[in-house]
Image (tube, rainbow, N blue to C red; front, side, top):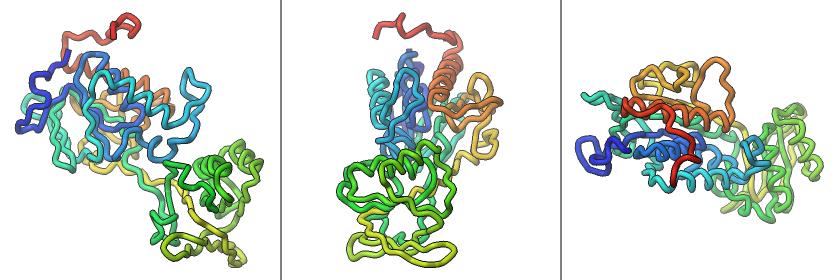
Length: 339
């Protein structure tokens, strides 16, 4: 049962208390919320993004995911919805749009986390599942003034591109995935990349070619133009400097992302580059602080969503024994429990 039930939701010098504070609302964090609830612990989930789902919701909610156990294919949005529904019976508290900025420990040894929105949470344990940290898209050098008026870095809702001439910029998996996804509904799709070599998987490139998408290589977007909304994209050949105007009701710039651990870098965690070092319990070097998912590192680490699910369960089970030393590490199988 919850160790802080009598204090949860009460306003005091700490703001409020919770058994487990999960920092990061991506797949690993949402599964961790379910598992903490399954163990009878009260849960709070904090994320800097305004919606649940982490990078999946922000970057590829409509993209099919093929490496989730038990699913031949599952759309990103559906995976997130399922994880949220799985945790819902345990009533997690969500603090969305909150960046965790400060971690201290109270006189009782419990972690205290403060957000940039003024929330202060005292937790029995903290589980960091923040993916690769805060991520921001690499900006398209030309035409930033059209951001939100035709220039986009994500495709959360493909329908807004219906019957438009779309220019996708980039050569990675996201660029080719979005080109393939938009091709059936857009008036036209043109993919522009600065070289003739692509980072995307060969199968993704072949699929886009089979859809009849024009792929323009060795070119960059040099200018965007339009009146109140984007209308044209000028592309320039990198060698000949020749230019060409493309009709563009929207431009999707898939140029990659810059990841930053942000305030977590100053918490005293043992870090390797942009990852947190953990042991076999998913424990960090800080007391009562665990981590799971892509943000963690250890010998043999494999960065898959499925691996993150297992790490989240391991972190929560070990956190439960720290919160209540008399608790069993393994709580039994879910099939043995009544829901």
